Amino acid sequence: MEAYLSAKAQLARVIEAHAGSIAQKEPRPYPSIEAAVDARLRTTEQAPNFQSIERSSAEAIVRRGTTYADGAVRFTHDNRISGVNARIMAEEDAFAMIVNMPPTLCLLSEPRRTWPGTIERAERRFEAMTPEQQAKITIERFEGQSHHLHIDSPQLVLPSILRHIRRHGELGAGSKL
Image (tube, helix red, strand yellow):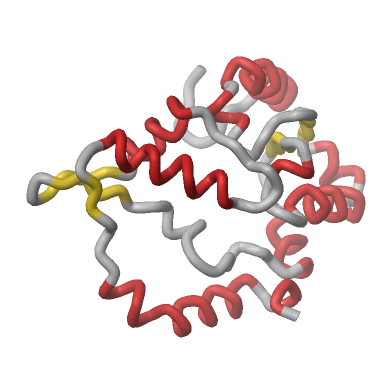
């Protein structure tokens, strides 16, 4: 049932359910960057579907989301992925976005090594698009790769990004190659 709620309704539900705990929750303190990285690695190991992340990639994520206060490292997880998943968009909302979507590159990891249902939803939505909509989307599959393939193996995804840019002749607003 929850997968069929609109994205707006799902987000409202999550905010309402967690309003008190989100507003009052302080990022957990760690004694060092290394301890925060270790915690990030443990989190990935506990994720569904055999996800993985390289230590250097986990460190990059931790450093990006770290603040220092009172002699402690405080790593703030991306709030879009913490707690209940509020990002599963209803089909009608997804297709409303697709109508005006700019050229898009989809990097698909091994289905068994990412969040359950992600690849299946992407494939189902792609198949339901018109040929004109499909022409704006480049899908690249990376068998054997995990959810974090873009940060663990940038050398694998760079050729896909370059092909996509050449195909569509743009990088996006304000971007330069």
